[in-house]
Amino acid sequence: MEINSKIKRRLALNKIKPYQPGKPIWELQSELDLDQVVKLASNENPIGPSPKAVEVLQHSLSTLNRYPDAHATRLKEVLAAQLSLSTEQFIITNGADELITLISETYLEPDDEIIVLSPSFSEYQFGANLMGANIVSIPLDNRFQINIHTILSSVTDHTKLVYVCSPNNPTGTYLSSNDLEALLLVLPEHVLLVLDAAYSHFATNADYTDGLEFVRSGHQLIVLQTFSKIYGLAGIRVGFGAAPSSIIASITSVKEPFNVNTLAQYAAAAAIEDIDHVNQSKLVNTSGRKQLYEAFSRLGLSYIESMANFVFVKIGHGAKRVYERLLEGGVIVRHGDAWEMPEYLRVSVGTQEENAKFIKQLELIKSKAEYRG
Ligand SMILES: *Cc1c(COP(=O)(O)O)cnc(C)c1O
Image (cartoon, rainbow, N blue to C red):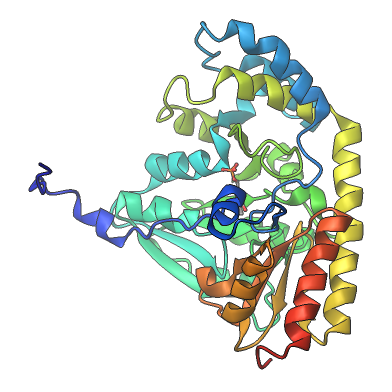
């Protein structure tokens, strides 16, 4: 018989909302008996993992009796060489998600504040809630742009972390290089800027920055990166942070020794050197974004131009129903509910065929006038 545990968990945990992942393909398949499911819900790489990474993985399986390298030495060396930083300026983590938790554990006392933009990635709030810190949420402007003056006017003596996701999930909007520099120059010394650049490789505008130039020039920020998006390795869990070495040393002190498994370390090092795969992924994404834009325009739907591998599109009051009809048609996207924006869908850019299937289903739903826009 199960007992109902009387052990009190920490009060801070009451504020934690469970993360809602995109519906997995197998789940929809088993619910609806569909064999062809298109998943455009988690911003994964539609062309698959880097073939070079897959090859390295096959060769490393026989070493799994050994513990991983606790310092991910080889991966840091590859990153340092490619990104013109030193190995002490990197921390390797079990996905960028783990890094957000580690940053929170390193810096947040119960009375501290973090600044987040809204709508944005929810894990920043998770980290703050875990530590019992306070969340100051400020809205993006009416065109979903990031306004540095709004950020600055929200900074107090208690502010520890400012999170800026650029390109921002779910809007695809970004902070320009000039704005980031201006923000870094005026942020007080007790504040660490966390620039989440998970989607940096997909950005095509010339005034975009992934922030690494500012790490190189010694500014106080940490840039977050992941192997889950452009490198196509979401399932193996690896990401990293790049920052001044003193910040890296502090965060490293709270990390578990073997946080990144051996396979992830090998795969990431191979993927980052697989320039062909990266370039191919960018091409598929840039043309896929255009394919989605054209369809949305044709259907009279407004969308936000995106620098990422997803598009945030306004459907209107019937968006939840459209989301459900798409599921029935075998297409998984993300409903805006997750960001309290119920009139929107976030659609990941897929292959040309996947995008076409999504567009076809959307047109079908629209022509049946099953929703009012
Ligand atoms: C996907 C994503 C990440 C990283 O995810 P991991 O798979 O944990 O590396 C980080 N930030 C944003 C905004 C993301 O969308």
